[in-house]
Amino acid sequence: MPRTARPTIALTVGLAAVLLAGCTDNAGSDGQGNGVAGATPARAQAGATSSPTPAPPPTGPYVALGDSYTAGMKIPPQVGEPGGCYRSGANYPALVAKGLSLAAGQFKDVSCSGARTPDLTGPQKVSDGTNPAQLDALTADTRLVTLGIGGNDAGFMEVVTECAKANLVDILKGVIADSADRISNSPCRDHYAGGNGTDEVQRKVDAAGDRLGQVLQDVRKRSPKAKVYVIGYPGLLPADPAVCLPVLGDAVAASDLSFLVEKEQQLNGMLKKRAEAAGAVFVDLAGPSAGHDMCAGEDKRWVEPPFPARGLAPIHPNAKGQEAASGVVLKAIKG
Image 1 (cartoon, helix red, strand yellow):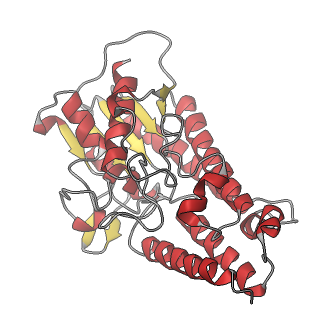
Image 2 (cartoon, one colour; image 1 turned 90 degrees about the vertical axis):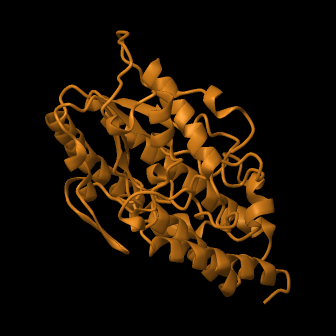
């Protein structure tokens, strides 16, 4: 084994271990899941599909639904029950409620880390109890709903973990011996979209879309007067994989980083399509988060890298990311 491969192996082993641990702790999407200085978050540009006819912005009652990217996993202060949902009092729903000047009784956050679409209509078991079906928080009086879900259905954190593992195997086999090999090799892409003509990740995204479509119909039935906003996922990786070298080194091949970018784009594309089909508003966080991904500097990133700042969740938004998201969502709501 070449000596130069040893630091890469150490980083890749650590990366896979951290990601695997995150997947077993009810973390999201959350890639599922599961980040931000720089531009002032409140001024972040919103990528929302707006209504063709102007309407007054909805107020309360407001119900927030979603997974760990909504809950604000491990961001202080952690509030509410059960504690295993890792719900933050400084997540974007709480900041949106504050921005709309809603009274305490006009806002309810039932998001939970690790949530999948079935957890919206059924109870979700977490480490210290059970989170009731999230849609049960909706009533006929609800006027505003935000929903951030889908990353866990698509298994996005598992995909990221598998990419780290697949690259480690290639390194141990000596397949990737130098930087030139890393340009042509893509073990993760080969694993998920091999020569059989199918793309396993796309299949899961499509299936998640079918379930999301049903959920949005249910939301409409329960809260027919509510304005519904489907919240997309922020960009996890930059368009140029070379930017990640200082953070990830050679732990994951550049072509596999590009593969992960493609898969997240497919996930957000599905969310947008389903939102529009259901008459909801899609709020794009990927566009505004450009330059604030996990490979950005600590003073700029909205999403933490695999080895995050102390106490935070890997590959999940940090407090700055939640604040930035709230600015984008508020802009979409207020028009």
